[in-house]
Structure formats: C-alpha cells, structure tokens
Amino acid sequence: MNTSPLLQCNDVRKAFPKPDGAELLVLEGMNLELREGQIVGLLGRSGSGKSTLLRLIAGLAEPTAGHLRYLGQPICGPAPGIAMVFQSFALFPWLTVFENVALGLEAQRMPRADIRKRSLAAIDLIGLDGFESAYPRELSGGMRQRVGFARALVVHPNILLMDEPFSALDVLTAETLRTDFLDLWGEGRMPIKGVILVTHNIEEAVLMCDRILVFGSNPGRILSEIKVSLPQPRNRLEPNFRELVERIYVEMTARPQGGASARQERFPGLGIGSQLPQVSSNLLAGLMETVAAAPFNGTADLPKIASDLQMEIDELFPVAETLQMLRFAELEGGDLKLTEEGLAFAHAALDERKRIFSRHLLTYVPLAAHIRRVLDERASHSARKSRFIDELEDFMSEEAADQTLRAVLRWARYAEAFAYDDENAMFSLENPT
Ligand code: ADP
Ligand code: MG
Picture 1 (cartoon, rainbow, N blue to C red):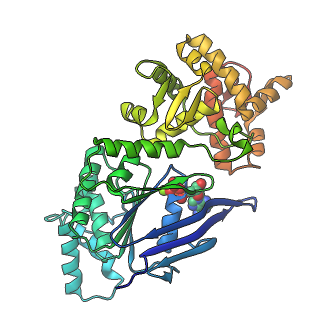
Picture 2: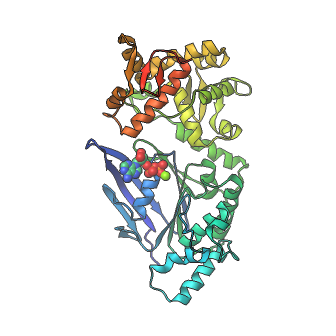
Picture 3: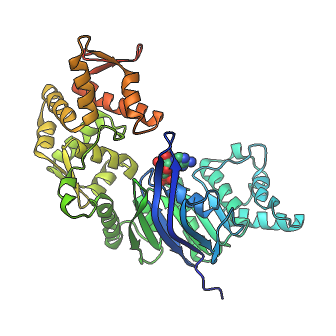
C-alpha cells in the first residue's frame, strides 16, 4: 500500500503582480496534508485565499514558492486523479444530464460502453436516476449541483476538491445534499479517497470535516487547525458540536499574537490607504441596537447573534469589524462588546446618533478625515472624486479605490459629514437633504 499522503503542501506561497509592479501576497506559509479517508475543511472569510489554494492543488495555477505533491509526486498541471466541484456548475444547456456527465470522461480514451456504464453509475449514485435525458433547464438548482458532483465523480478521482459547493443553494436543499454526500462517503460508495472542502460556513465545516484549517486574511494563512472527532452523523444541536462552533468563532476573532504591539491592536489602526468594507449604516445601527438590548445588554456571543439574525460569517464579520474600527465595539474571544460610545449610540435619538457617528467617523477613519479636511480648506468646499481615487490608487486597484470611496461615502452621508453629487462626481460639504 502506498503510504504517502494523498496530498502535501509545504510552505506554499502565492503572490500576484499588482498594476504598479508590486506584488499582492495572497497565500503564505501554507502547510497541509490530506490522508486517505479524510475530509479536510478550509474555512475562512471571503478573500482569504481558499480558492487560490484549491486552484494550486488542482494544477490550474503555480505557486510562487513552496511545493505541492500528489501521491508523493510534484503537481505540475491538472492531475487526472484530482477533480473539482464548484459553487455553481457551468453545465452545457444543450446537453442532457447524461451527456454533461459523460463529458468528464471524453478526454480519457475509453470505450463508449464503459463511458456509458460509468456515467449512469455516477448519475445513479448521486440521486439523479431517471433524469438522464433531462436538460439542465428542466432541473432545480439542487439537481443541477448534483450533476456537477456526478461529473466530478465519474472520473473516479482520488481527491475531490469542493469549492463552496453548497453555498449557492437554499438552506434545505443544501442540507439534503450535504447529508446525502456524507452518507455516501460514510458507506464508502463514492470512488474517492479524500476530500478538501472549502467553505465560509462554520457549521458546515464542523458538520462535514475531520479536520478544519481556519484561514486568516491579508495574507491568507492558516490561523489554526481544529480536529473534529465527533462521530457521524453529527447533530448541530449537541453541546460538543456547539462548543466547536464557538471555539472557531474565538479563533476567527482572535487578535494576532505579538509582543509590545499587542495592546495597540485591540483597535487595529487604519492607514489612509486601507480598503474599507461595504457596510450600510443601517446594519451598523441595527447591530448596535440588538447587542445593546436584552438579552445581550451590551455583550453578545457572535455565534448567538449569527443564528438569531440568520447572518453568515461573511455578512456578520464585516459589520462587527466596522464597529470595532469605529470604536463602537470590541471584538474578542468570540464576543462583541459595545464600548461606552457604542452603548450611547444605541440609546440615542437620531440627531444625537448622527453626531456621535460623525465624530467617530472623522476621528477613526483617516480617509473620512482626509476628505473632510480637503473640503474644509477649499473656498468652494468641493472636490472631484477623481482626486481621491488617484490618491487611493497608490495603495489599491482602481476598483478597490472606487469601492472604498463608496463605503466611506455611505457613512459620511448618514453622519452628514460630507456629501457627494453623482451627476458631476463631486464631493462637497453641502448636506444633500
Ligand atoms: P477566497 O476563495 O478565500 O474568497 P480567493 O482565493 O478567491 O479567496 O482570493 C484571495 C485574494 O487573491 C483576493 O484578494 C483576490 O482578489 C486575489 N486574487 C485571486 N486571484 C487573483 C488573480 N488571478 N490575480 C490577482 N489577484 C487575485
Ligand atoms: Mg473562493
């Protein structure tokens, strides 16, 4: 028996060139091993490099440094033993389910009868029996995703890579497909030996994986590795399950460890060239109100808020982090704790809220302060958007600069700190209302 791991990544690093010639570091110090019989989860927020790592493993891109090995051999180009399932599948609309699945085997010179047999077996296995001659448009989203699974399984890969395969489905369809997948896996009925599952859904990772690598961002790296030894089938409501979910929230909100600077990082400082997330003032106010009120009374457990408000981590974390950036909350140990000002905001009436928000925006978001200063200093109290875009482009792409300006503008409008006229692309001090 071959005892090499199915897959090994050693010290993998990936950087992309930026327009200005500098490099964008996306993955650093990636070490990972997949052994037979394992489902390994890559869990992290959007932008933490999960898909990039999957593309490296699939042989669709090359690392900037480090090594990737499949069955002990360096990966160079797509390996026949590694197949991928994506969030949503590009099925060919003019081909039937059978033809879409069989397509996976066309590249391998195989007798037609074998192609037929294998394709029908994959279709049957994944629960599409009877739909062989249906066209994609006749299928529901869940069924189409099953075709995607069948197309990956039909090649009998050793490793199945899954990139957020359930995230485009509605809640119930996703859960059914997860359960079916785990049943087939548990019964050893799928022609695969190991799985890597990319997800941004904490519960999904705990439900499905034997081991979870928690990713951090900027650059993407592994923050921690969590072993899940709960027996399958797992129950989301069980205390041990909840405890793991809680622990992962704690990991994902942990501040970077470090000597003297650790204290300052309670509120990570921003530069003028920091990218800002798109978070509406409504969401910020709403979260502060929720946490200020009973039963939280100022401090809330993030997993609890996520489930109460039905927010995914990619929605909740940006809001929580924006509150932290504005010093309306502290984020630690999986808890969100409102600061005194955050509580004051939550209990204030609209006018007072705007005043508090404006003060924090202009104090803690350097870009907002900068725009305001420029407008204050000019006799016209106005300035072109292009001027700020140019400044931001020293730090980020044009698209990111545009989004960042949009983000700061949304907050400034709420705070009545400054305004913007879309028609002539000018910032001004005039209050639009
Ligand atoms: P995730 O899957 O965790 O959401 P990705 O791997 O898609 O993250 O992206 C990680 C980062 O790498 C993002 O900032 C993204 O913009 C950047 N990135 C991904 N692919 C490229 C590319 N081909 N060129 C430049 N930047 C890229
Ligand atoms: Mg991705």
